[in-house]
Image (cartoon, rainbow, N blue to C red; front, top):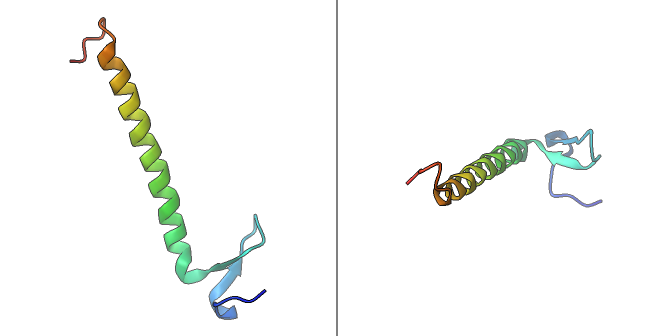
Length: 60
């Protein structure tokens, strides 16, 4: 498999067995964290939007 990474600057993923560039590993983790945070913000916004429609809660 042709890669654009140096063999000394990569590791094999223990889950998938695919090569991971060590300099890109930090960005992979940051992307995973950002996606979870975005999902939590979206879920919170959806719950708050639903609560504004519920008269007994009286959020607005």
